[in-house]
Each structure stands twice: as structure tokens, then as C-alpha cells.
Length: 459
Image 1 (cartoon, rainbow, N blue to C red):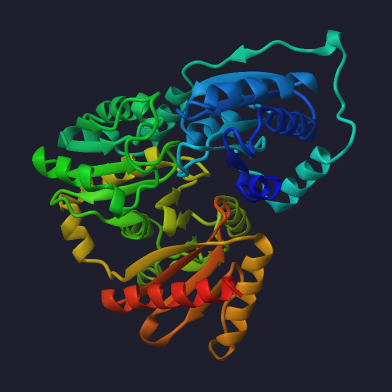
Image 2: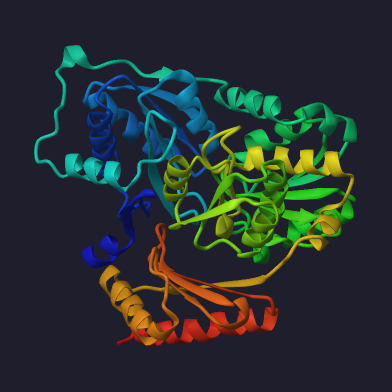
């Protein structure tokens, strides 16, 4: 039992993630919150959560842990993660804890730790936090130093105001778009319809209730967006938006009902912003479609590749002064002019600005861009060491192709095709992404490497 619980608890740069009622106990959550309070060294820490039924329980545990070390918890309630990150900077808080397992299923929840700059902790800061957590004697404060909880209502409106001030909101409103949004029964159920209406959109929303779990699998990948596609066609919408439970990821559906998927969604938004910033620098994680590199080359934009993970992208952006960061595999768009984090709300506004300024449909815009077919898969990994050993074996087998090992193993093949295999930051799996100009070839690559990896993991 202990081994299974350990396997289902993930600790890393994506925070502390586990299964409710098993590995992610309220005591563990409280202890990590206390450690984070010691890490930030005092002041106020914002606490936000998504709509999972376990969220309120963990919110109380986080507040207790923070109070125990003399930190003042400021509860924002249910709030998109990018809004929480924005609020940290807007209120000069010492940091924040987001209680969300993002795209994982109902049975999971997690703590994501945010520093005073509104960014997730990088590996160095995360290691320091873990060192504090592992100390035997927490620095609990005496009764007279325990502070009171505070509440921060309306945090989303601060975020919304910044977005609307950063795009051509009047052009969007003048276009009177009809749009659909799939809220995934997550934070979008509270905020997305009103946000789009503030941009003058006639909005059709689905999966827009909360409190009873997710009615569709929470990751906004094509296989899960059939209802949104049908909704876009039925209501003759110009665009459909699909979110994940905490509102940082985005996928698009065109007016014809075509489901773009994360990579093409990132391509569409990234290409629009590249044209606005010729000659500058952008960061792509290594799992992002190479089509964006082709567009960047056309406009003299330098591309810097980073490991997968939002914090790795933002670190590379800070080091290179990049105007944009893209996590193609998640549809994550990081646009510092609005916010230095993945932000589905900023992405929706930018897409609407793009449609308003160009007068062309999503389908027409995609036709003008280079497009590659990508296929993803994942293989359950029995242990961290088994995953390390399997990836090392793959690297050695394919050494003649000079694999890139900045994050997992990326193997570049003939005719621009490539495949990436890497251990997930959020699940006990190894993820596979294959890309090729030929859809059948991309599918075959993914299945071939899925089979090869499964064989290595069984050894």
C-alpha cells in the first residue's frame, strides 16, 4: 500500500500532486503550506483553488499551515491560476498557493507554489522549499503571533482589466462575435462567459456548472472536444474555446467545427504575435510544433528551446528577454505584455483581436500557415527509476541520430519528422510526441515508439 501511495504522489517543479484520500492527505498539505510560509519568510500568501470538491478541504489545510508559521493567508476562493499569479504582483503579496491538479482527473489535487514575482518556483527554489519541508522541527509560532485570515474578492476583475487594456477591446466589441466556450466545469464556469461578454461577444457556454465533478475529461485535447465542436456548428459561432479546470490551458475549435488541438492552437496564436514582433526572441518548449520555428524564421524571430514546464519556459524568457513563450503541447501561451504565465483568458482575447483585425476566419488563417501533424501517447511508468532506465536505453539505441536530451529524449528523423519521449511532471507516465508532415507517418511513429518504450519498461 505504501509503495502505491508513494507512486501516486508527485513532487517537483509542478508542485505537490497526489490522489485525494490516498497520497495527498490534509496533514501533508498543511505541512507543505507551513514549509512554504517559512520559505517566503513572512507577510501575506494568497490562496486560490479550482472547482474540485476536495478544494475547500485543502484550502482549510493550507490556511492552517500558513497560520501556524505566522503567515497571513488571503483567500481568493475559486480563481483561475493565471488570475492568482496576476494578483500576487498586483497586491505585492509574498507568494501564493494554487490548489489545483490542472488537467488531471477528479481524484487528483495539488499544490502549486508561486513566488512574489507571480511565477512558479523554479528547480532551485523548489529544492530549497523541499529542504525546509524535510527539516524535523517546523518553526511554529506562539499564540500571540498567529494572524487572522483575510479574503480577496474580485481578484479576477483585476486580471480582466489588465487583459482588456492590453488588446484592442473596441475592435473586438465592434465585431460582435458569436463564440462558444467549454468551461470544463472548472473555474471557467464562474468567469468565462462574463469575460467574453465584456468583450462584446454573444456567448454560448457548455460544461458551465460546477460542484459535481467534470462532465468531460479535463484535458482539452481533440478527443474530448466533440461537444464543443457540435456546439460551434449548431450556433454558427466564429470560434470555440476549450479550457482546463484551472484556466491556464486553451484549445480552439474553428467556425467550421474543426478541432485544432493544442499544437495548432498555439501555432495560430504564436504566428499572430510573431508578426507583431519581427526580429525579437521567443521561447518554445521542446515539445512544441516545429511549424512555429518556420514562421519565426520568416519574420527574423530567434527561437530558444527550453525543457517542458511553464517555469522552464519563463526562466528561459527572463534570460533571453523573449516577447513570447509557447508550450505547444498544452496550448500554453505566455505573453508578458499581459502576464508572465500560461493564460487562457489572455489567449482568448488575443484570438478575438486577431479575428477582428484581419477579417479572416480561423480556417483561412490556418491554411496560410505551415502545419505539421502531431500525435501524442503516454505509457504508464511503474517507477521513476524504471522511467530513467528506459529513456537511457532509448538514447543509447538511437545514438546515431544524436538525440537531444535537454528534457527526455528527442530523436530527429528523416524529412523533418521527430519524436520526443519524456517523463511527465504531473502524472506517473512517460509521454510521447511524434510529429511529421504526413499524418500517417506521425501516427506510425507514435505507435512504434509506444511499443518500443513499453518493451523497455517491462525489462
